[in-house]
Image (tube, rainbow, N blue to C red):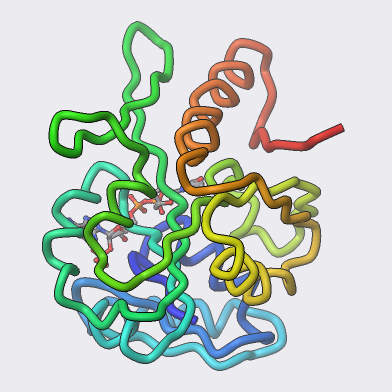
Length: 216
Ligand SMILES: NC(=O)c1ccc[n+]([C@@H]2O[C@H](COP(=O)([O-])OP(=O)(O)OC[C@H]3O[C@@H](n4cnc5c(N)ncnc54)[C@H](OP(=O)(O)O)[C@@H]3O)[C@@H](O)[C@H]2O)c1
């Protein structure tokens, strides 16, 4: 599987949890940065799975399941740059939530598509031709993924076309401590994404560290 933006906090954390079970290709706008990040992750990972680095375009070409772990604020630019990649038939996981902080409070910032507000996942679905986009993992903190000693214990709602969700879950279910739950179609992504600022506000106002999501 490929992780684009794999040089960032979430991408590297996810790679560490997957390495050992899968061949993971970390993608970056710079092949050199990707290779450095892959070598660093391989050194840290227990189990020593196969980890490679490549430019984003090559990482997509080499993988059936692709995680978009690029900075949420740059998703429009990413979608423009990546429109011509080989997306046909790929299951693509969008983990993005775009947020802003005003007066000490986190707010959700959806994207605009033809004047209509859409979620990040719907925004990329409209632009990555032939891909089936799945939304999920927004509420899994990168810091916990990156700490091999941390027990996760989170529920992970996933929205999108069922077959694509199943492909993504099959690639991720080796991660101990995550329970994947099917939420419904990709139109529900706005609820998944906008739950993150709620979670962060609750955590901050009530002194909870690395908050996550769980269905009781
Ligand atoms: N941090 C968390 O706890 C967390 C939890 C759940 C989900 N998420 C989501 O995961 C995603 C990544 O978060 P992060 O905290 O890891 O972000 P980050 O470290 O700030 O950035 C991730 C990567 O995005 C790439 N990037 C930056 N500008 C770009 C552009 N214009 N086009 C393409 N790629 C670009 C960079 O890779 P290169 O420069 O190497 O290309 C960077 O390493 C976000 O969508 C976020 O909402 C984060």
